[in-house]
Image 1: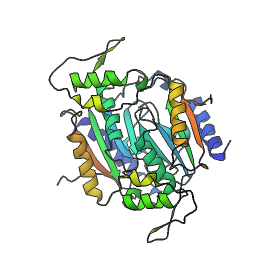
Image 2: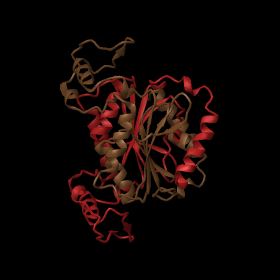
Image 3: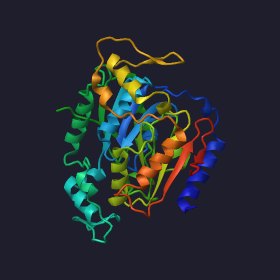
Image 4: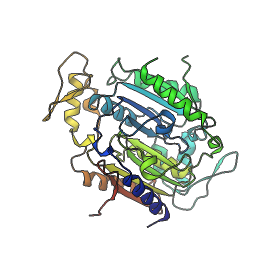
Length: 186
Length: 186
């Protein structure tokens, strides 16, 4: 068992030992809202948005992008589990701003080891482990942070399976301060 | 401004006021691992797995399924940001076990209001707001929880863009106890 697995299971044992009455929480989110945000390690949505267990759905992917899968999750969230208000939260210094889709395809074709960044560009050396599959994937990299957030809010807003009455709030989380900054609508 | 937005921003203000030195955290996850899990409101991955800000990537969707988008996120996670170990964590009493894909398509075609469940089945009444779009979406509903977890671990394991050296740990989170239970390999 790896060190990480041991650490996670030890933390879990402690959490479960102090679980209290959380085992009685109902399935639908008590505060009837959902957050779509980035997988970034520096962000803890429960902490920065004040969530307790049972409060809200939290969907996360690379970039907090409004992908088909994020929309799948949000539609299940309101249709079967009753959320009535959504947040889309991107953040400053997002990894998605530091590469381009075509670059990612080339890096993966070169090697499926972790790439390095020399301060200017991503570097990889061919080691026979690469796969062309990465060239066929849309990576949803971000060139303009404000435009990406706006586009993601709009995509969800205009999706045929998203009802008009659900407000969609766009925010940027500042990783330097922990603050949520509202999207300034164009 | 809605009550929910006011509450989230008030919680965020308090979090940012006590942000400490977290603004200096680097982008790549410090503990070099990633978790893929469900958006379920009852689960707080940081709490049940012992994560501090900066430790690990957390990707979440409806069901914690190994969708194309989850794999996109995991590949970015190791290729550009250096994670070397992954957890796939499903959970007991998952909403994805309480409907079937075809049913979801019909419910959305009937109405884009929240459906109700009468204890036996989902109910909706036609109100002119429905959309056929839901019939063309794969919802990734779950009929056998163990099989779904096993399939998701295997899909990631066998994906051409996932290197062999990354361990993938399958677990089920028990919402009644807060405990992580390892996948019993078939």
